[in-house]
Image 1 (cartoon, one colour):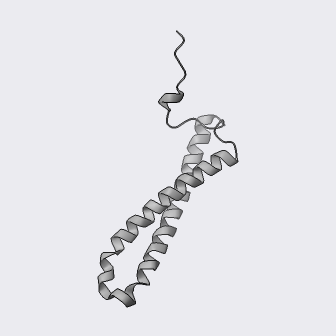
Image 2: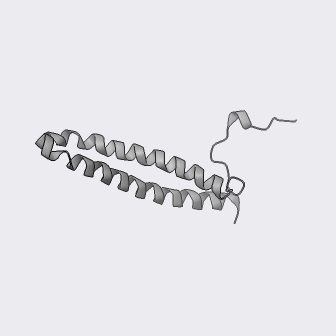
Image 3: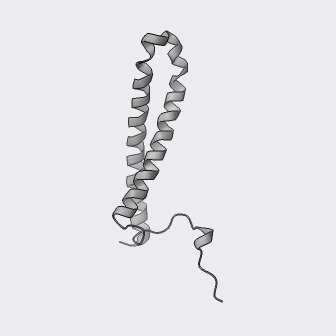
Length: 95
């Protein structure tokens, strides 16, 4: 397989992992909110959207760290096409 196909498969697999992480972290955040119900009553409902957003943000951070770890651990940087070019690492034009 070529680098573009490897990159596509990595992104598709990463998307599935990201969705699973999001569901996990949102579930944990909502469970944490449900533990607050005996103390705050029905006013806990105002915290639910914040717990939802916090779960998504935590999933994004976990996904970024996991992706970086997988690429470094299995030496995948030379097997995949770079998604974003870094202007500081761009090769000079020798024309």
